Image (tube, rainbow, N blue to C red):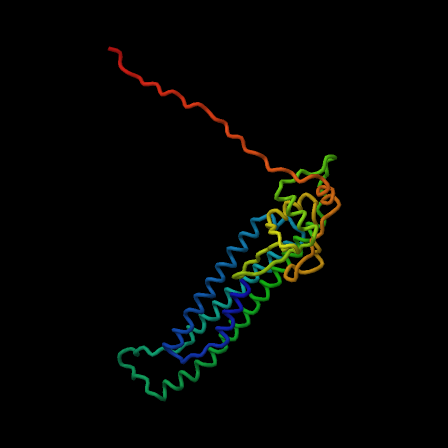
Amino acid sequence: MAYDFEALKARVRDISYKPGTDALRHISPLLLQAQGLTATALVRLTALDNSTYTNISGSRAGLELLASVVSSSSLAGTDLAHVVLANPYEGAQFAGYPADNEAVRTVRHAEAIPQMNGHLDDAVHQLDLCATGCHYLAHGITDELATAQEHKPPAVQQTTGPTLTPAQYDALTALNSGGRLYESTTRGLGVTRVATDDGTRVTIATFRALAKRGLVTRDTRTYLTTGQKITVTEQGQQALARPRPHAALSTAVATQPKARVAQGAHR
């Protein structure tokens, strides 16, 4: 979402217009986009407020930061609406009033342009706050989740050791040779993925399952955007010391078809 705010900020900052109908045609889509981003930010604030994120230490600051994004986005929309209001329109006067000549029109435009540009500058400022807030929020949530994972009590290991699926065993083997956790941004949304040195595909769901059981850890001292090194723990090494599990065979139970009973009327 930060990139959406940055793109809108650039459009508002670089806008070129002539007062009147031309200005209305250029400002209208910008105002609608600002209102759409405000709605999106509000939806995401509601979703975050209703999630387990609120149980993490420091989450209140994140919620307040996203609320400030909602506010700044709404103010940017208001600033753009003020541009629409300050724009001099060319409609006809009431009956009995003289029509504007070119000199009067020039004066009206000269008086309106500074007001319109001032509102545009205010909108650029608010959109910049929105983009900055979204970037800080994304990094803050990542750090808070990593800290929460570090302070999570380790899972109690059974004497026989954890039981792995074949896919988890293969993923653990690949991560033991080297792997990193990355996060990239696509259309404003963070996408987390696992990269192994030997090229083995490891899904994020498998990695999280291994991490939840204390079999792997990641270096949270580095950013996800640059890659966090994944390490197989002592428990993970113990799991690898055992033979690879075999996939469970599904047993199909064959049943004889039930006899169809035909009911007829007694004669």
